[in-house]
Image (cartoon, rainbow, N blue to C red; front, side):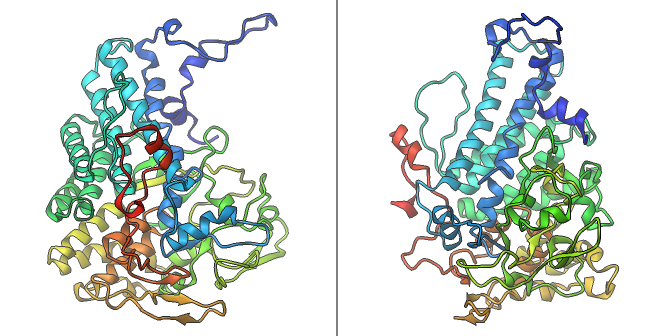
Length: 532
């Protein structure tokens, strides 16, 4: 089993249940819970207790209707169309694609709930450390800093998705929280990270894997600065570059020679991953991206122990942007004939074409193959989900340089990231210039008809730094980043793609709504402007 030691010490809160021990007597008293009054933790229990601060990240990032879905479903790379076996689900996927979700939609609501579960868990542990119910005699300052940084990460997700959210920091305060503005949430995240970074560990080994060390916190802060103009109206390119430089010059990470190394079953060994969420096919099964994307018929071909559901796929317009020599095309997408791994027989053929949101075949559209689907895969993959990797830090710096008038410097970095994608095909194509990065996008934005033709063609030539947007798409497709990228590049609310058109009512939908159920519970909360 993969990473059992890491999972047991960092994410799985097994410390309490282990105390029950094993017994051959059949008349023991069985408990379904352990009350705080009857559990007296020692410092040996701290790793298990700390794990509860991170456990919600699994559902936050790639759980059902988690951040992966919120980033990809409303964007221009991935779509979930109707299939013969369903995938309408009351129209939720169509509404996400068309930007027609409501304050009662379950997708944004799930993201809200899971992020606040993470906030609540970190607040509880911080409170218990402060009042002494969790005894910490050594390393208290570092533990508190790590928890605050983890909480800041959750708030960075809420900042990006919902914007104007309550800042809850006191676990014992039972009053209804007041709403903060997006700028206030931004300021809080920045302050928490700046104050905790000096106290965080610089280690990048099994002891800090999946946790907030100094480099993960800096990557979080760099990402917040990269999007600062969207969040607050004020750009922070220099601050983004500063945080990236700290990681690039002092951190222990390197680009993997092989792009796929970052997405293998045992990708915890990747030297490129700065912050990842650990998963395991037995102990932590929420990484079900393969189940959502593989056609049902594909399961037997891989001797899978679970039957895939066959939903999402690539938007054909995005696939058409790839250079045919870019190996990330095949490293990211399952396409064409798929063969049985035991006898080599043809099982199915994935086609690029997707007719529209309604009435598609089982095998229409390329499928997400970025995360290794091993023979005999179960419902959950053991592939850890990359949140920040070194390529991302390099590209954050490159984009900040580009926007700061240093296109040639940016081009050097982008070329470095591109190199491995063309090393085995046409190395000369890896080179990109500053002038090219300032050009528009190659994406043919427009409405796709059912026959595959494009109507209302807009193209992407008018997108400032559109080539940089393309580069981000090719490198980070299916990594849960695209919605934020489109917003930052001014595409999200003004371009047509596949069966999505911009709203004509002036409502950009850049922010998801505050869930209506939360407003009903708390009169201090007001709905985001687009949903009033």
